[in-house]
Image 1: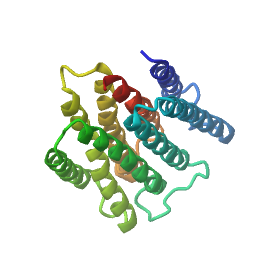
Image 2: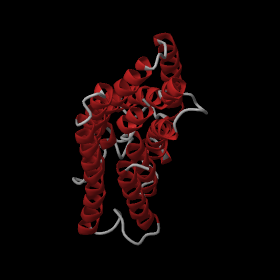
Image 3: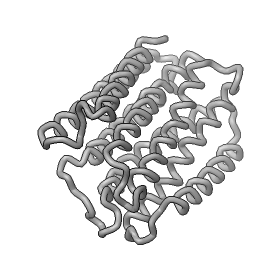
Length: 263
């Protein structure tokens, strides 16, 4: 295990422990305002440490002049994480903004965060596509799997959405449901590129992280935005989502290191 993977693992365990405190009612975001603020800032501090780990990966890769692909990947993964961090800030909802776009979905501020998450995950998708192309995965395979994923994401959205939520919320969350499902399916590109069974374990971990990204956002859509008649199963779903989401980010940021090692 590299030092970067070890750092990511420790931070993931800390994020899991923090959310466990919330689930147990010891410390969380459903108490006094000061408590809620401190908890949210602690979550964001852990994400900043993960960004610092991503920056360290980028520096390390840039010191490897023979690995141009890994350098490009390190930049893409770091920028992706920074954009997602901005989305995390929105999702912490420090201003306690509810029902901004209608009277149906209480936590509709989550739709605003898509403005950061969508380009962030798009950069990650580009990074995975670069690796797949470099390893000889056909464009046809990637387009077919992406199309299937987009259709499945759209069908999943139709199954969970409340169509009284308003045009803006529906358009943003529907489009994003398709994008994040494609991100999850891009794990197949990595597995095909290196071999699902025979490839490096580090690549399989990154592929698992891509799948977790789709699972994390499925939790948000079904249980936070549209669940419980628009009220959401809050705050429990916030804690559960953070565990899955943080682990996913910690895993996918290892892509440049995994590719550099595998190549």
